[in-house]
Image (tube, rainbow, N blue to C red):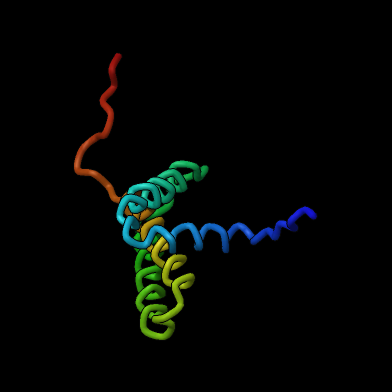
Length: 106
């Protein structure tokens, strides 16, 4: 008799994966930030800094509220943590530098 496989939605599988990696969550922070930076560079136009910093502030407040009101729910903590570091990468990409990034090579 063949076993029947059950499929979880993608979000549930992703949060289960990150929850099982609880001691090793630190290695995923650069990946999450890279997703935020990649999101910034995939946009057709350059957004203002207030959008980048606002998204990070909103994600930070949501993460703090989730930790206060739902402290025992690991799925919520995982999703909010991943969203926080994705928005941190997006905010870092919107930050202006003091000089030109690339000089004209011609």
